[in-house]
Image (cartoon, rainbow, N blue to C red; front, side, top):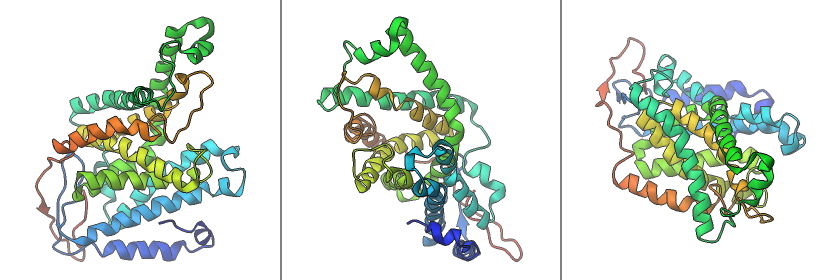
Length: 351
């Protein structure tokens, strides 16, 4: 669902905020049993109302994204001179949505812990998570190239690498590729800051709550929500310029389901959102590698080639299925507890 940017601009913020507050207050019931996962504040309530904050989070994150992207639609689209800044601000809308919902739940004090910003522990897993945050997106990107080449979808040139040689010039292929990898790692850490805005919302706030439904529903739902959230840019031709608007949402959702599953697992493993933001940043920095190894003069179709297309999802989907079977997405947190009631207030929902 999308919030009408026109109605927001016309001054209806107060009714919307009041509606959010009243809806979220409905889930704050006296004597409510809540659970806090030691690794990432997961909800363990027995009430159906736990879905209400999730729905409002989805509405707010998507609505805010459309509001931020509105100048693109009113101006030059993807050619807007401030496109980079607009897209960067848009990346922070999921974090803002999570913050708003948490504010109305009166859980702002525990927000950093809830979304995995702090504390950073266990330290060993956190550091290994950072390393995996670099390796996982690179593995996903490069396996897509080899799988696509093997099934005849991606016309690669791994033997002669004509395109790479042209770009490398006198520096040589080895030096050129080494520099590209170093730029990707550095760019990944720099990109982690804007990516953090998304990951606070998607893997920090939303993912633990959707896990209540089970691993497969959490993977699919979080991926579809993440993919459709890109609609303000996708419908302008972003990422899938040769696909129709609705189909670009389908392709983006497919890619987000695959990538989101690994990012969700990394969030659980590291007990932190920081390695996930780094992985997101590295992915954004390295996703263009597919163009480097394309056969000279061949046509790159994102909907079926590279990790952006269906051929790049085949092997990761098989890996995800094995991970689900072996319980890789099961949380091993603390048992549920009953929050003490405060005079004139009800126990909090969440971490």
